[in-house]
Amino acid sequence: MSDLPPDFSHSPIRRFVRYGYRLPMLIWHLFVHLPVVLFLISPIGASMRTASGERLDHRAIRWWQGNLMRVFGFRPRRIGEPRGGTTFFVANHCSWLDITLLHSQRAVSFVAKAEIARWPVVGWLASRAGTIYHQRGSNSSFARVAELMVVRLQEGADVGVFPEGGTGAVDHVRTFHARIFQTCYDADVPAQPVALRYARGAEPAREVAFRDNESFFANFWRLLGNPGCEAEVHFLPIIAPNPEGRRKMSDQARRQIIAALAFATPDAAGEAASDELDPLLEK
Image (cartoon, rainbow, N blue to C red):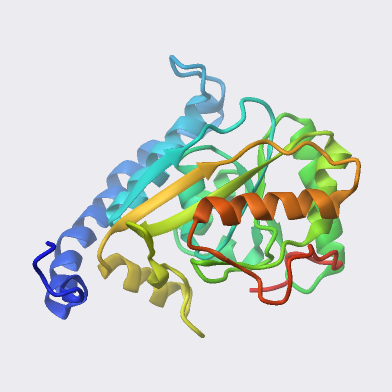
């Protein structure tokens, strides 16, 4: 398509064509594949293992989420390897698809805003996958979430968080909230930074992020008709709890993610990690 105008893939005709074949794919994925996955993520699936030793319910979640990404035209690709043992994953955040993308590579109990639980299909499946919900604006909710994260990790489950505290731009990594890294000290587990990169070649796919005042449903529909792009999951070097404190650990994780994204810019407000009370109160 190099001989076509740069904006041809975004034309109304091409968008109409993409809806024409992606909508049937989405319907099939929801009404045929999803019931199978729901059976496999029952306690029966949790007690079974694949040939590689992975829990069957985790494998089912990864398969379903990976195919959901493909329905939207994304091409998931993993760079690096997730840590083998119990891990605290920290990632940049620009879209509701971030959880889906990371789940396509590793089944993780995410911390997410409580509103996600009410989203059709995505929220329900997130709940079945063990998502920990946080009520925005509530310090008591954060205290409960922090305690639950430690419990999950001590039980051997992976936990994933977005230390920016909310969604931002595809090519911009905001300040990380350092307090959330206290979980690594309390549970005695390392953190693994994860860079989630949406791109077309060397250029960021900026349209993946929410527009101003855009609802989940509007974003969902817009992305379903957008041209496809790469969706990369970069598993970066492990960071052990730093004796110098959680601010140092947070800053190290953020710098790794910025470097992996290549086109990302740091927060204009400064490089230092924030230690505000609630890292999950933003949108």
